[in-house]
Length: 86
Image (cartoon, rainbow, N blue to C red; front, side, top):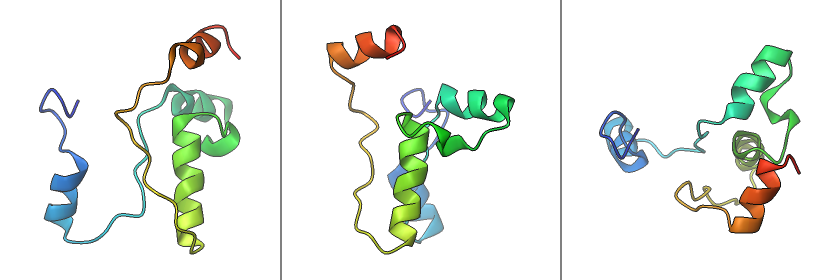
């Protein structure tokens, strides 16, 4: 949605808010699935949203964890594993 101009990117949001961010949670089908199952969103630490929430918790706890790169695409093996549910 950022590429389509529908949503602001992180830098614009930080400029508007004038505060540092502790994390970004990407749109992830696992968020919807967790909500429908009544589970917490980090129940699947392999999901991008689950990893983001875990990273945010770590930063709150004082750990230095870099913000995830949301533009990075997984390799072909990673995509195939996801396609076949592994």
